[in-house]
Image (tube, rainbow, N blue to C red; front, side, top):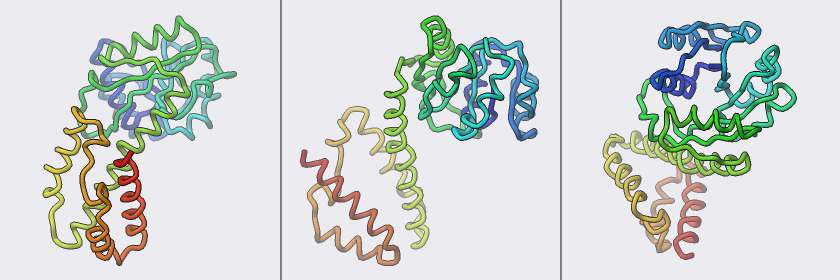
Length: 253
């Protein structure tokens, strides 16, 4: 396991629970490498030159920029092994010219080290540069997840982009909401039932049809009053206006 971050931690533990042996963990930070390796009863290293040559598969789960920067060092001396990265927005061809067998195993979920997840329900998106290795990557993914998809790199780029809208931008709205409430001594917990219901509705309703609020009917009276409350932050006013227009435009299609 090349990497010891959030995704690497959850994936490696899921793989071990499925019966796979994690031989070694790499991280540039010794504390992180040691911590994950201890949990997996595996070896660890902080040097790419010291990666074991005995593994069948090398799962690379590091920052996108680090992957591009370090790919040659990761593969050097192990060119005939199978290398798989876990990134949503990087093509598997990042390995091209550095090794002969490569692919992708992208689990689409938001991971935090201290929060347990049920990996079996996390969709995993796989591909490889040849049919035999694609079957290997599919089998690996299927050992930890009940939802395995074959997506091309092009599809995966848009999948990752959509995930940014669905998860990252949404969570940012929660953060802005929490700050706003804190300024007026209102606990964020008052929002939890609303947030939960909003998420639950889209299990049975098309998101566009589940949309509610003043922007749907473009109620300028309400919207202008709310924008006035944001006078302390022109940036938030712009966000409010932009999202309101987008909501109204989408709801009238």
